[in-house]
Amino acid sequence: MYTDTERCVRAVQSKDARFDGWFFTAVLTTRIYCRPSCPVVPPKVENMTFYPSAAACQQAGFRACKRCRPDTSPGSPEWNARADSVARAMRLIGDGVVDREGVPGLAARLGYSARQIERQLLAELGAGPLALARAQRAQTARLLIETTELPMADVAFAAGFSSVRTFNDTVREVFALAPSELRTRAARSAKPPATPGVITLRLPYRAPLTPSNLFGHLAATAVPGVEEWRDGAYRRTLALPYGHGIVALTPRPDHIACRLSLTDPRDLTLAISRCRWLLDLDADPVAVDDQLRADPLLAPLVDKEPGRRVPRTVDGAEFAVRAVLGQQVSTAAARTHAARLVTAHGVPVDDPEGGLTHLFPTPEALAGLDTEQLALPRSRRTTLTTLVGALADGSLQLGTDTDWERTRTELITLPGFGPWTVEVIAMRALGDPDAFLPTDLGIRRAAEELGLPSTPAALTARAAAWRPWRAYAVQYLWTVDDHPINHLPV
Image 1 (cartoon, rainbow, N blue to C red):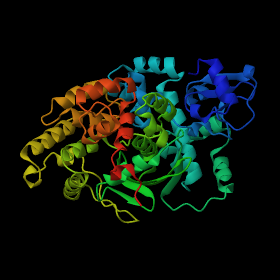
Image 2 (image 1 turned 180 degrees about the vertical axis):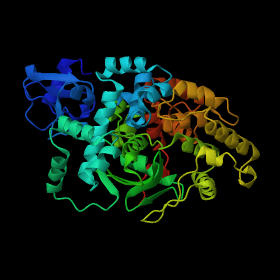
Image 3 (image 1 turned 135 degrees about the horizontal axis):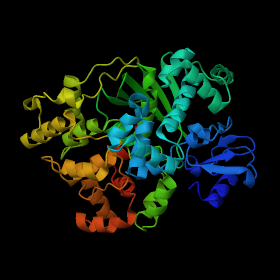
C-alpha cells in the first residue's frame, strides 16, 4: 500500500488506526517516522514519504516518533494472509530466528539462498533480514528497559544484541534517547511497581475485536496443568528456546494485557510473537468482515459481533497431537486424554500463582509412548504414534513458516488423517486464513439453520465467495450453536 501516495495521505490526514502497520509515514523535515494514526498535526503532503516497514524507515535515517511509538503498532496483516517466501520469512524474523541462527539459518529454513531472501525482502519491504531483525531488537530492548529493572548490559544481550556498544548506538539512533533516558521517562509515568521477574506489556490490535469466541475457545479446550482461565485471564505455559515461560493474557477494550514470566529474558521476542500468533492479533478485521458481510446469510452474524479472530496455538506440534486426541470425541474427553499425556510426559514447571504444572510434552518425549496405556481405539493410537514419529524425526514440520499446501499433502498421507483433521491443523497451527471445515458437525448444524447447503461439497462451493477468509467464516458459523467455545467464562 505504501506506493499508493494518495491513499496513504488520506489515511494520515484522517488518523485512521486501521492502517497502522500497513505502512509508516516519514517526515522529511523532522526526520521522524510515525504510524498513520499519530495524534500530532499531520505534516504537509510535500514533506511526507512512505515506507513499508519500521526497519526501512530506520535504514533511511529516520527515528521513531515519541508520541505514537510506531515500533509498537500491530504487524502487517499481509503476513497472515500469505504463505510465500517473504511472508514466511517475516514470521520467522518475528520469532527471532535471525538473532538465534543468523541469515543463513533463516535462508536454510525457507529453502533459499541468503542472497535470494535478501533480494526478496529488499524488494518488498525496503530492508533486508538484518535490518528487520535490528528493528525488532530495538523494540524488544525498549520493552525490557521500560518494564524491568534489568541492568542495561543484561537488557542488551537479552534483546539479541552482540555487544553493549551496539545496543547503546541502536537505541540512540532509533529512539533519539539513550537507554537510561528511556528508563527515566518510563519511570515518570504513574505505574504500579512491577512484580520482580514479570514483564507487563500491551499487545495492540486492529479494532474491532470480539474476545468471546477467541478466549472462550481457548478456555473451553484448556488442558489442565498447561492452560487455565483465572481472574479474567487466559494463562498457559510456554516452551521456549532458552527456558520456559508462563503468560497471562487479558482482553481489554483497546489492547490485550500481557504478563510474561520468563526463566530467560532472551526469550521475550519469541514469547511476544507466539502470543500475538495465538490470538491472531495482526489480522485485518475490516477487510475480513467486509467480504463475509457481502453474503446475506452471514451478514447478521458478522454485524452482531464483528472482529472475530481465529484462535490459534503457540506450538504447531502440540496442537496436532491435541487434534488427533480430539477426533470424534467431546471437548471434555479430548482435554482428559491430553491431561494424561501431560502428567505422564510433560516437563514440570513452577507456577508462583499455582494452577499450571507442566509444559506440554514434545514429540521427542512422546516418541517412546506406550499406547496401550491410552484409552483410545487402536486406529487412533496408530494415528498418534505415526504423527509423533514424523514430528520427532523432522520429516513433518508444523511451524508458522511452513508451506500450507505442501504440509496439507504431507498430513493427508498419514493414517487416520482425514479432511477435518488436516484443515483444523491448517487453520489453527499453520495459520491459513482460508482453511475450511465443511464436514465439521457444528458447521453442518449452522448451515442447516441458516439455510446454507448442508452437504460438504455444496457448502464448499458456496463458500468460494468467502475466500480467502473461510477460516473466519468458520468462527462466525460456530456461533450459531450455543457452545462454551463462544462465551467468555464467568
